[in-house]
Each structure stands twice: as C-alpha cells, then as structure tokens.
Image (tube, rainbow, N blue to C red; front, side, top):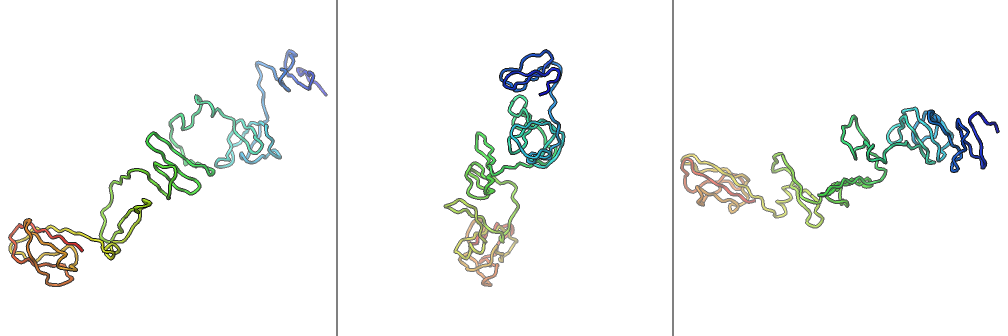
Length: 264
C-alpha cells in the first residue's frame, strides 16, 4: 500500500487524512480532519431518480452530487446531493426540519405552473374540524364529509346550489332514492303516466265583459279545472274538449282578478 503525505494508517485498516498525523476516530474507517478544506464528492450528471446511469447499477449507500436537471414528473432530478437506497436516487434535503421546510405544509405560496400529484394508489384526504374531503385513487370516487364514498361523488351533509337556470316542462325531474340516497332523474311524461299529479296556476286580470280564458294546460277533464273571480268560485264550460279554453258563466268586469287552477 502506498501512503501519501498526510495519510496515516492504524490497525484494523482505519485511515486518517490530516495535517498533524492524528489517529483516525476509533469508530471511523476513514477520518478526514481539517478546518479549512472541504470534501468534494463525485459530481455526476444523473438522468432520473430511477436510472442508475452513468453507474452500472444501484448500490445502497452511494452518495454523489448531481449536476444535471433531467427527467420528468416524480422521477425528475435537479442539481444537489443524492444518495442511493438500493433501488433509486433520493435527494438529500432538510424536509424533516419544520423550521426549514418551505412546502405548502408550512408556508403560503403561488403556483408558477401546473403541478401533478401522483398518488401511487394512495388516497388523498383533506381533514378539517368540520368534515373532510377524500379522493380515492383506486376507484376515482370523491367523498365530502365521508371517507367511504359510495358513488363517484358522495356528499354526507347539506347541499346548497345557487344560481340555477330556469327550466321548462320538458326538463327531467330530479328524484332521490329513499333507500340509497342516490340522485335519479325521470321525465315529466313518466310522472304523468304513472298517476303523478301536475298542478298549474294561472293569474289573469280580465277586461270588461270577458268570458273566455286560456288554461295553462290542455283540458283532459272539466273536473281538473277550477275558475275563481276575485276569490269566488264561478262555473264555466269547456267549448272544445282537449283544448285549453274555458268560458265563464257570467261576464267579468274590467280589472277582475281571475285565478285558474288546473290539475292534470
């Protein structure tokens, strides 16, 4: 073995590198001793955290300084100190120190671009004192107020919807399954065909001598329509069955308030 200046050997293969010939620390195989010089480890350009290149293979315990910015996603590497756990490169950082952790867990900030979160079959749960928000990466379900969603979106609690657009009689009707609580939809025609009741109300201010009034729906039966003048029920006739016109028994005066209630 060749010993160079400043390198000293001790029993059991221990080596010390120092200026004053001090023995290596008893627990060290290599003890580098200096107060003005640094240790420079190999500077290597890595390609990604899952590629050993330019080394032939991963060996647990390897330490290098990476000089490259390479790769993509969670496998990307940036300049810094890396060590190998036997299967991949891991960047050394001060993440474990709360005082130096600059992640979203300890500091506020603004995104400078799109960020992808790779759950790797783990669930994402946001907890608060009043409930929680869960994304289940296995089945793609989202739970609000529950960590066991039974559907694509499962809300356990009150739901408030603002600024709904006006609908029409041809829109589907939203219903709730009384057992599972799931939202369902049925058409208005299905409601009617199954004996469901549709009620419509019409308000009219009459002109002097007016007797004909339009109903909000086609008249399936005379018994399905009621006519009120100034709050008093008055009789009427239906000139055309299946139409939407009724004829008051008595003429109305100007500005009479006419109320038509129709149930089909």
